[in-house]
Length: 237
Image 1 (cartoon, rainbow, N blue to C red):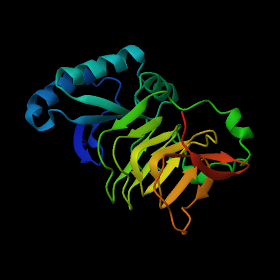
Image 2 (cartoon, rainbow, N blue to C red):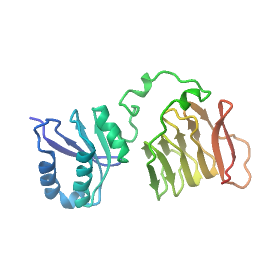
Image 3 (tube, one colour):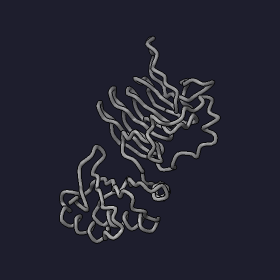
């Protein structure tokens, strides 16, 4: 018999899988589990997977409040139900895990239809969620950060690291790794850094690498799509 609540460690914190049986008392069993594992879980970032179970705004807010009582942060809700995912996004929750190969509706990215590079399709696409992820750290080699919305890094992005966002990416430091902005297809997304010298840049479906010619003293730069390709220019307010 499968466990009705299962907790495991993932790259972004902890994943709690909850039975999608509509008769399963989520809040009661979840509180019991959190009480038993309070010391182990304290201060953690939590993603909850609820399968086919639908949840409305009031229920999701209640879920956030329960985790808050235990000094836990609910940052993602993984659900099969489309309305539940949409509600979760309005509450500032991610609806997929870092490195997920799916779009916002759970469809495999490899099966997405090709979009024109001129940005016309992006104009008809809804904007990314307004929530932003703030990282006060250096993103080190081997680490992958994925966020639905904007990402701000107060530190460096090292070679071998990657930051992927459906919105804009701002690096208040040196950008040496891979950064993909507008990952959901937003050709209007931008990438900004105090020192822009990436392994690779991606905006929507466009890709660019840093030139091999000699660089002078680094200056703040921003990268955008212009005339169908990624260009970098001085970053001005």
